[in-house]
Image (cartoon, rainbow, N blue to C red; front, side, top):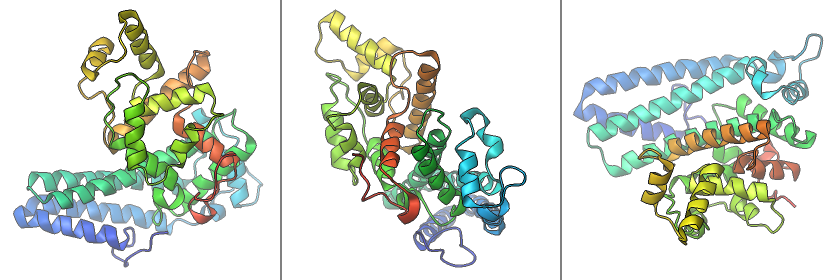
Length: 340
């Protein structure tokens, strides 16, 4: 868990504070005006953090249904009963404030990065800020993933309860934890994937897997999809994650290769065939977040219509397996938990 630095910067740990202060100083030396704008953003972020800090614990401020006692179990039980289309009106106020805070933090860090680039700051400083932006985006992504699992009507009770416990810890400790504290396996997979630019080629994914294994600090998500008993539908979801394309787009490329008698396809040829825009391949944390959202929407559509292809994202399939195996937020990590 992250330790707050001091009262003024209670919402940042010492490393974050040091980085932001260095960045603001570098910007201010070149142009005081953008520094003033960023100082205002920091002040507003502090006020948002104060609201979260001053809001009572979830267990003591949220009772679910009328007449039920306040407790963590009450909240978890209610979350497990809420469908995805109705979740917004069942989320505790502290969680809503926390979600707004996280967006504000991401926007602040992105603004700092833009200003650093505009004033020609060092690459080292700009890269460090980019890493902080990415970690905050992955934290938001992990929260959305657990919401997706807890609201999945088809998920086993043990899985839904496990996901709800992760959400409770995220919401309760918003200012003190980030994704590497409670789900390092997800952060590692996303950080590695954000550095990958797929080459497609034979569409076997050999190059892409090599890069992911090279970049991933925690390989458990990758190892999961390398197992012998992983269902075909889940492997199709992993292909979407690997190539940054939908199942339907991958199928279309393979059909084209078979019709043309070709063993491989280039990025340019694939782009021309699919008619996609220039920046179609997910690269970087924000592009990965966009990719996840698209994959989730497509999966939900297939689940609703019965169309062929994956009915969940690769991350969701893997996390469901980890949760089924007993993953919990009690230690903020899952290093000892592996799906059987």
